[in-house]
Image 1 (cartoon, rainbow, N blue to C red):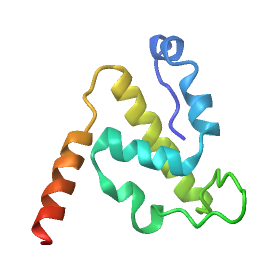
Image 2: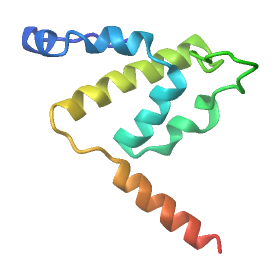
Image 3: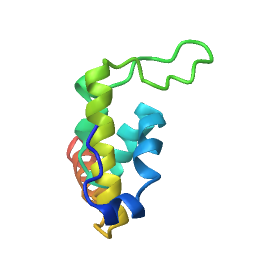
Length: 104
Protein backbone atom coordinates (compact mmCIF):
# COMPACT_ATOMS: atom_id res chain seq x y z
CA UNK A 1 0.00 0.00 0.00
CA UNK A 2 1.25 3.49 -0.82
CA UNK A 3 2.64 5.37 2.17
CA UNK A 4 2.10 8.98 3.11
CA UNK A 5 5.12 10.98 1.90
CA UNK A 6 5.49 14.39 3.56
CA UNK A 7 5.60 15.38 7.23
CA UNK A 8 2.60 17.70 6.83
CA UNK A 9 0.55 14.96 5.21
CA UNK A 10 1.67 12.47 7.84
CA UNK A 11 0.41 14.76 10.58
CA UNK A 12 -2.80 15.66 8.78
CA UNK A 13 -3.75 12.15 7.67
CA UNK A 14 -2.07 10.03 10.34
CA UNK A 15 -5.29 8.10 10.87
CA UNK A 16 -6.05 7.36 7.21
CA UNK A 17 -3.56 4.64 6.29
CA UNK A 18 -4.31 2.43 9.34
CA UNK A 19 -8.05 2.89 8.72
CA UNK A 20 -7.78 1.84 5.07
CA UNK A 21 -5.59 -1.12 6.05
CA UNK A 22 -8.41 -2.59 8.21
CA UNK A 23 -11.40 -1.43 6.14
CA UNK A 24 -13.78 -3.85 4.45
CA UNK A 25 -12.46 -4.35 0.90
CA UNK A 26 -15.85 -4.53 -0.92
CA UNK A 27 -16.84 -1.31 0.85
CA UNK A 28 -13.60 0.36 -0.31
CA UNK A 29 -14.35 -0.77 -3.86
CA UNK A 30 -17.78 0.88 -3.70
CA UNK A 31 -16.20 3.99 -2.22
CA UNK A 32 -13.78 4.09 -5.15
CA UNK A 33 -16.71 4.11 -7.57
CA UNK A 34 -18.18 7.08 -5.73
CA UNK A 35 -14.92 9.02 -5.44
CA UNK A 36 -13.51 8.28 -8.90
CA UNK A 37 -16.62 7.75 -10.98
CA UNK A 38 -14.95 4.60 -12.35
CA UNK A 39 -17.27 1.58 -12.24
CA UNK A 40 -14.45 -0.89 -12.96
CA UNK A 41 -13.83 -1.10 -9.20
CA UNK A 42 -16.97 -3.23 -8.84
CA UNK A 43 -16.63 -5.30 -12.02
CA UNK A 44 -14.50 -8.15 -13.33
CA UNK A 45 -11.58 -9.14 -11.14
CA UNK A 46 -12.65 -6.64 -8.46
CA UNK A 47 -16.03 -8.31 -7.96
CA UNK A 48 -16.23 -9.87 -4.47
CA UNK A 49 -17.26 -13.47 -3.88
CA UNK A 50 -20.71 -14.19 -2.50
CA UNK A 51 -20.89 -14.07 1.27
CA UNK A 52 -21.52 -17.42 2.93
CA UNK A 53 -23.61 -17.43 6.07
CA UNK A 54 -23.01 -14.58 8.48
CA UNK A 55 -19.42 -13.86 7.40
CA UNK A 56 -18.38 -10.19 7.33
CA UNK A 57 -16.68 -10.81 3.98
CA UNK A 58 -13.91 -8.39 4.97
CA UNK A 59 -11.62 -9.37 2.10
CA UNK A 60 -14.40 -10.01 -0.43
CA UNK A 61 -12.84 -13.37 -1.20
CA UNK A 62 -10.43 -11.48 -3.47
CA UNK A 63 -6.76 -12.37 -3.98
CA UNK A 64 -4.36 -10.45 -1.74
CA UNK A 65 -2.86 -8.60 -4.75
CA UNK A 66 -6.32 -7.32 -5.76
CA UNK A 67 -7.11 -6.33 -2.16
CA UNK A 68 -3.84 -4.40 -2.02
CA UNK A 69 -4.65 -2.65 -5.30
CA UNK A 70 -8.06 -1.59 -4.00
CA UNK A 71 -6.61 -0.38 -0.69
CA UNK A 72 -3.84 1.61 -2.42
CA UNK A 73 -6.29 3.25 -4.83
CA UNK A 74 -8.70 4.00 -1.98
CA UNK A 75 -5.93 5.63 0.03
CA UNK A 76 -5.08 7.93 -2.89
CA UNK A 77 -8.73 8.72 -3.70
CA UNK A 78 -9.67 9.46 -0.08
CA UNK A 79 -6.60 11.63 0.42
CA UNK A 80 -7.43 13.62 -2.75
CA UNK A 81 -11.05 14.02 -1.66
CA UNK A 82 -9.98 15.22 1.79
CA UNK A 83 -7.79 17.82 0.07
CA UNK A 84 -10.82 19.12 -1.84
CA UNK A 85 -10.90 17.20 -5.10
CA UNK A 86 -14.55 16.74 -6.09
CA UNK A 87 -15.87 13.20 -6.09
CA UNK A 88 -16.36 11.65 -9.50
CA UNK A 89 -19.70 10.11 -8.62
CA UNK A 90 -21.61 12.62 -10.74
CA UNK A 91 -19.81 11.33 -13.82
CA UNK A 92 -20.65 7.79 -12.74
CA UNK A 93 -24.29 8.71 -12.08
CA UNK A 94 -24.63 10.43 -15.45
CA UNK A 95 -23.04 7.47 -17.26
CA UNK A 96 -25.34 5.06 -15.42
CA UNK A 97 -28.46 7.05 -16.28
CA UNK A 98 -27.37 7.44 -19.91
CA UNK A 99 -26.50 3.73 -20.19
CA UNK A 100 -29.82 2.59 -18.66
CA UNK A 101 -31.80 4.91 -20.96
CA UNK A 102 -30.06 3.62 -24.10
CA UNK A 103 -31.06 0.01 -23.30
CA UNK A 104 -34.77 0.68 -23.75
